[in-house]
Length: 211
Image (cartoon, helix red, strand yellow):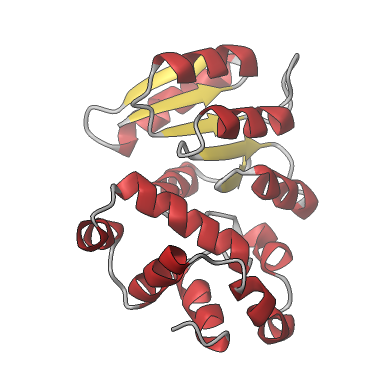
């Protein structure tokens, strides 16, 4: 596993690097002091698995960086690690393309969990902002049909398979796709349905009559 930390504070980067080496055997950690250096490293390392990104940095800020990472490597997951606990910031980061949002006040275990969640093809948002991102439950049924219209035929097929509990690896094998492609489709499904996990996606899919 290869991870990139983008943060302008050296002490924080070193602490994160030490923590992320626990994410898996042989984890390789790259570090960048700003977004420009991070983007250059992304171009040089095509085998990166995930980017952990600060929002408030000199030069190009994290907001713009999320979009730039997405433009250069749309399949590369970006997780925001921010001092902000404002639900609006989390919502904005996810709208720009981040697949995870973790407050810096969170525990080490939670950050590792967030990384694994994103690598498994799910979005990750902390409980602190979960309700803000998902919206009121009572609105979900009324909005299910227009959301569902945003899904492609392939995404509907994948939605049906993930709702049956099939892991990404199995879905990829059955559809003759790479796991990264499956993850990208699942991310698109979550965004189209405005959900943050497989259980919610399945529920909205059933309400819309897709599965």
